[in-house]
Amino acid sequence: MAKVSWKPGNMIYPLPAVMVTCRDQGEDNIITIAWTGTICTNPPMTYISVRPERHSYEMIKNSGSFVINLTTKALVKATDFCGVRSGRDVDKFKETGLTKQEAQEIDAPVIAESPVNIECKVEKIVPLGSHHMFMAKVVNIMVDDDYMEENGRFALEKTNPLIYSHGSYFESGKQLGTFGYSVRKKKKRKRHNGKKSK
Ligand SMILES: Cc1cc2nc3c(=O)[nH]c(=O)nc-3n(C[C@H](O)[C@H](O)[C@H](O)COP(=O)(O)O)c2cc1C
Image (cartoon, rainbow, N blue to C red; front, side, top):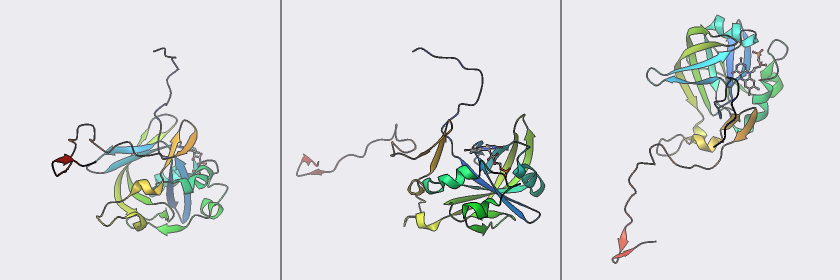
């Protein structure tokens, strides 16, 4: 297989593009972030990497907290907008029409239209270069109960999660398997009258 070599860069895609909400000195803001992910299961830890020149950077540094709001197909326009306009110039809640709700464990707004709001407290800021990484502990999660199934499962896939890949936004496709399906034993088919059921 022929390959083309590129200079080192970031090519880990697809990713979520999340809307991060923050509050500092009575001001609320939203910033779109793609450099985010899980870094520990227990305790639950996450990160966002933010350029120091972003308006949100100082806000998050001062307050020590932020909310990761997961995005959906329905939120794609707002997600893009919050990634190309600064809170220095516009009120992004007002411009996007997104509904503000209060977080439960931290003093910050959450986006009501987002199906999952992850409340985070900053533990450490790691200056890396262009971006500084806010390592944070997850202190609360709120989910939209419209997607709760009777058995207590949260049907995240039904929210139509937004995918960001190499500069473009996509909606999710069809399910290909579930965790561990490659090694899971197939259930035996029930036989009726000695014949295999179809
Ligand atoms: C899809 C997308 C992903 C982005 N990811 C990041 C990111 O991970 N880190 C970052 O610092 N900026 C990122 N940005 C840029 C900021 O969202 C953008 O500069 C924003 O206007 C900053 O807002 P603020 O000045 O109100 O903080 C992203 C923008 C888009 C559209």
